[in-house]
Length: 92
Image (cartoon, rainbow, N blue to C red; front, top):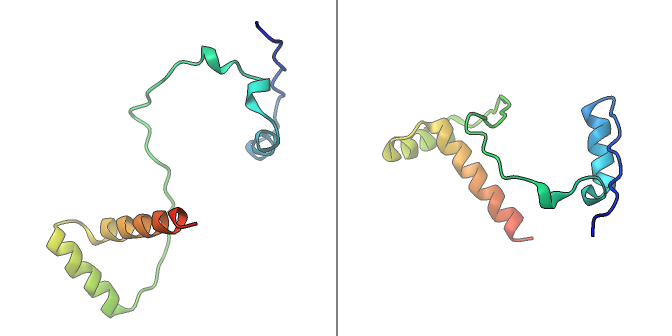
């Protein structure tokens, strides 16, 4: 049985669209049974550059740990932050 889908409104900007989808069920607007899986192999995750002040001793310890793993220290910091964040989210 096919049901009538609502028309998706036009949005003035991304923030307005975000607010809309936070308060509306997409199944009222989209027939997800007709959706197809897609791959976007060339997409890169968006990143933001930040400035982070660390004590010199801590930064040196991080650099030593990164050197032992043969990875850039910035990558090690990102990995550790992601792991710790996932632990915190999982423990809730």
